[in-house]
Amino acid sequence: MHTKLGIPYWYHSLANYTFITSFIKLNSSEMAAIADDELSSPAASEIIRKLTFPMKSISGNAFVCVDSAAPTDTERFENKSGAVFSPESALMVLAESLKVRTSIMSGASSFICIRPFRRMNHSREFRLFIKDGKLVGMSQYWLNKYFRKLSGSSSVYWQMADDFINEIAWLLPLNTLVVDIYFTSGGEILIVDMNQWGLPVDPLLFISWDNDWASAGGIRLIAPPMRISGNVNVSF
Image (cartoon, rainbow, N blue to C red; front, side, top):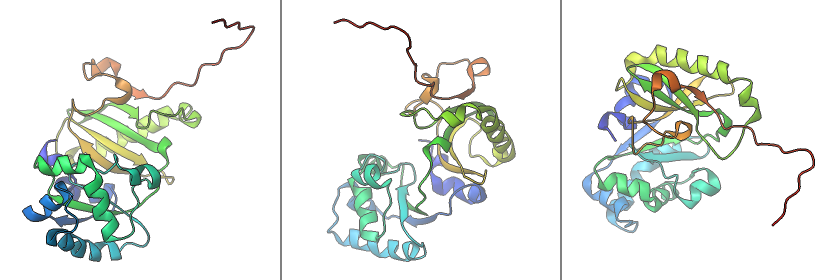
């Protein structure tokens, strides 16, 4: 990932357009404690101490990640959407994540990012594809479900996203990139994450990065399930 796309590097310019976030800078021994899953080390104890203050300021659960990776590959994320309550559980979920450990070992991450936990409606999460400062594509983020209510509102979502990018384009760290967003129930748009344009980032419903984005863009949603009616005979 481009270093400018890590949360600590764009947050100061776009804080009004994302989740309130606190940051902890990790030193080399603290990064090693997470990368090597050494949770009984003095460095791990120091991370827990540093996490205590920002997590105390959050009413309820928190969500933690590092600059360029979230622990979405962990059991806690699958079962609890990543919600953590204590500094100890926050450190544990980071150390359990191969994505997080790899990001730290590669030098792509050196901060822990702490946000209030928010249970998000998957139907309102999207990936935006921005080329030369303009929105050229938009994909439903979660591809495991058809959301009926999106079909009739796709043009509204597209227009809101287009207006949003036009408003913040001058603040983005790069002219060409991918931005993951969330539409709140109140109609606001919050930035969840940013990624580089191209592999290894998933183009989701655009399937491939080798598109003529000028003509193949727009918004893409999971198609409704196919229904078969009439006299259908199946034999094996």
